[in-house]
Length: 450
Image (cartoon, rainbow, N blue to C red; front, side, top):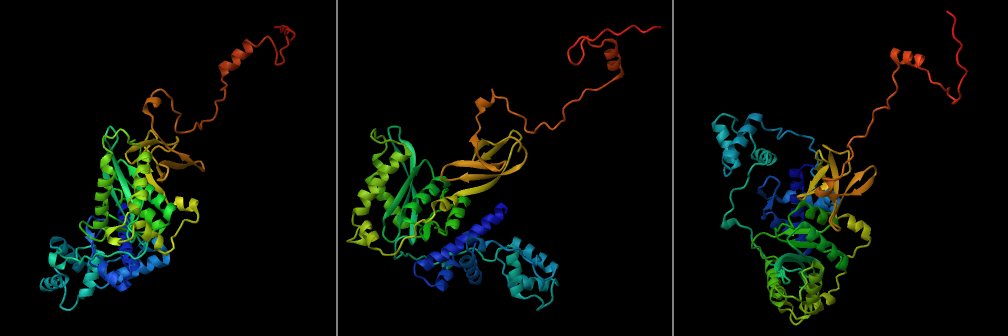
């Protein structure tokens, strides 16, 4: 699957997640789909798109029946854009729409009639609309304030129905090293679940946090994130889809979870993070910081009565909630979801580039395309070589300068055989060895009589 098709698949999955997240919050499917039809989602061609109710109903049904695989686009048995419309009109439709994205389909039909491209009543508005969709043309004008989708605040009733995640930058230790913490918060109970620390917003850090979250508390139904670098990557979307977690990307200023996570970040900064910079007691190591941060969550924040839960604390509300959690049954199978396969081209000196770093692979693959497995939990990369998985290591330039590498191709030439010539035969006759094959001295030959 090419990159554009992968992006379109993730767009369909994001729309389905947005619908099912609202259903989990208590909405009916019809109301949820009605709201999602008003939202715009990024597509593979760089534009933001919306979809109609019938399309969303079909995608939700396919996802419920077949899971993530049900959203893959099936090969069409009718590759032509339209059977009802002429090629001349389709070309005119495409040219006109690309020149003026705000012109309506009925207006294009009227222009075509006036120019004599089609006859009056020959083209159906529905057929032209569907053809424009298949051609991926702009069908909606620029959205104004009066037509903007209605924004609603809502909260989930039970724990682990919706988990919010966001990152907060801070500095730690005597050197004031740059650090970032990804915090996972339960929407219904406001309980802070876990925190993972790294240097920047990356998919690796987020997926490590997701792994720890699921092992500790089970799978959430929905996961609400923003459009940060650690959340919008395809690997993040693929892992969430494999786990059956509905990944929701919030738009700028959308109030679904914005106020909750931002308010917590201010509390966390005032109560803990601002004391880390320049403090000689603070070890800037990731594990050490995670221990301090999670100690703050469990011993302070989760035990203090929350304003929106008064008089309960997040820990009290979490304990009182009787909705069963969804723990992991088979850890080995669960962790396989965090291994992503990627196609990479091997350079002539047997190097593949992954996330900007160069890795050496076994000899013999120069100039070919290999399938590299990226293990997000352990930070390893593997390739399949001679029937077994081989771990890749970063190239060591200094060592390679003094180490002779073997050839990339095996020596298939047959061993050399002695060549017999007349000169060799004459030399052997004139200068025969003084010993025979057994090492004995034979009797000298008698002289031939002339």
